[in-house]
Amino acid sequence: SGAIIDGKAFAAGLRERVAAAVPTFVEAAGRPPGLAVVLVGEDPASQVYVRSKGKATIAAGMASFEHRLPVETSQAELIDLVARLNADDAVDGILVQLPLPPQIDEGAVIDAIDPAKDVDGFHIANAGRLATGLPGFVPCTPLGCLMLLKGRLGELAGLDAVVIGRSNIVGKPMARLLLNESCTVTVAHSRTRDLPSLVRRADIVVAAAGRPEMVKGDWLKPGATVIDVGINRIDAGEGKTRLVGDVDFASAVEVAGAITPVPGGVGPMTIAVLLRNTLVAAHIRAGLVPPAGL
Ligand code: NAD
Image 1 (cartoon, rainbow, N blue to C red):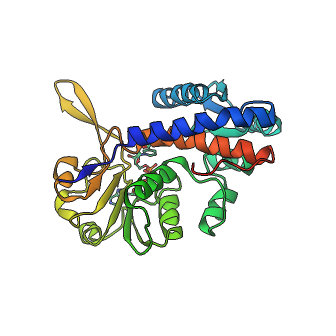
Image 2: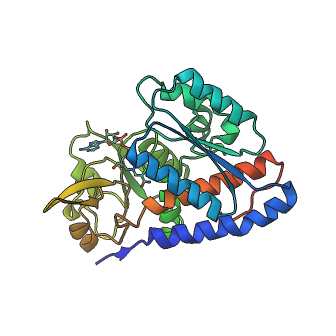
């Protein structure tokens, strides 16, 4: 059966490399890199994410600025905070935790973030840069997936890749990254006909559909590299739940050349890449060259 790609270990390595580069930055810039995280409301999953992002930021030797706003915050108030963070020289990265409450237009808030501080890579300027193959900030989850793929496969040029999902946060930027690596990319989505036969041709499968255990082992080309982005909580009986990906791991691991588990695959990469993007933002804003090999 196939190799298991240890995202947890890979992420720990990336976090170490980021943390190791921080003292040099502090010496040159006279301040630590800073990440501001904004949370509106009390969504439990978002609270967990924001807490772990803050912890990881501090563990890397960076400054963490947490802003918690009440659920009834208006769009104008939130954009006002973003404007203050844009103007704050100690802040290199700004992350507004999604989803936002219904009275706030997410697009309007993301567009208010200075693209130079958009470490989530959601601003239209950074999305456009990725789409046109220019350097810019790339969303953390797909960039983490690309790092795992390159770590496993090295050169990706010419490989057939299928990305399942076309969200602006995962699927689309993932497809653009793979295209920039000269893969032949197919993007599948909820209206795709005959997904199994598309997957069967793929050397690389990235599953980001939010459908528990949808991709079966017998859909895969033997030896394929499978990156499972899905995080789905399912009923495990006896009042318990468990996390599964978008790939049926038990059958897929028998056919794949390598596969990421859930949990412990893509998940840990997201925060590590966020720290990496913040370090890069800090260097660029300070007029310094970002360290190579991150
Ligand atoms: P989303 O709901 O915004 O998008 C899902 C996409 O999958 C859509 O484009 C849809 O067309 C497609 N899709 C749905 N059903 C399909 C089907 N049956 N066949 C083919 N395509 C189908 O979700 P998202 O934000 O892109 O996230 C996708 C998954 O990744 C979720 O499980 C989410 O929890 C997980 N996720 C994980 C991380 C992480 O690991 N850090 C980060 C973001 C998202």
